Image 1 (cartoon, rainbow, N blue to C red):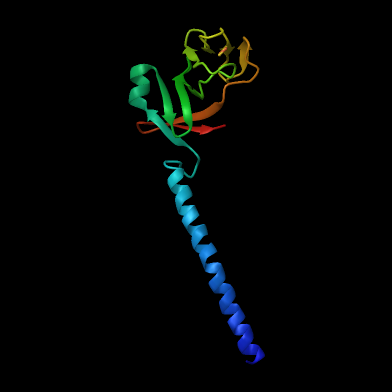
Image 2 (tube, rainbow, N blue to C red):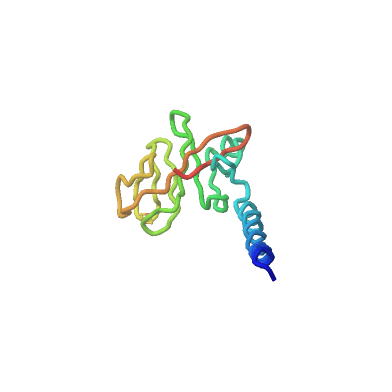
Amino acid sequence: MERREFLGWITVGMVASSLPMAIAAVAENDLSSEVKGNTRADGFQTVGTVTELNQKGQILNKKSPVGKILVVRNANNTLLAVNPTCSHDGCTVKWSQGDSKYLCPCHSAEFNTQGQVLKGPPKKPLKLYQAKIEGNSVLVKAV
Ligand code: FES
């Protein structure tokens, strides 16, 4: 076997041996797009409808694509979105429109519109999301 022929076979072998890894990488990308579900290119995910928001005054979705989420409108009609799981002991906070605060029913913690602790035992803020409306959909994205 001449040197040129030998190198040719080495090249074919290298391409053939890397083929399964290339196929696996493509398959993994396909899987990750399935796992991401309705995540859009801009990172927003649908968590409810404007109809629900208008009817109930809030969207409390415990199984949204981003996990537990609470979306409300404040007095200025601005959308606010947080993970309503209290950072103290895991109770679900409620939005108080009159106070413009999130209130925890378990140990009386209070959080401002940015999820920061105003009062009570929690040391950490609520997880905050950016929220917007498109058509009849309410969308959120982690901040
Ligand atoms: Fe919310 Fe304790 S669980 S203040």
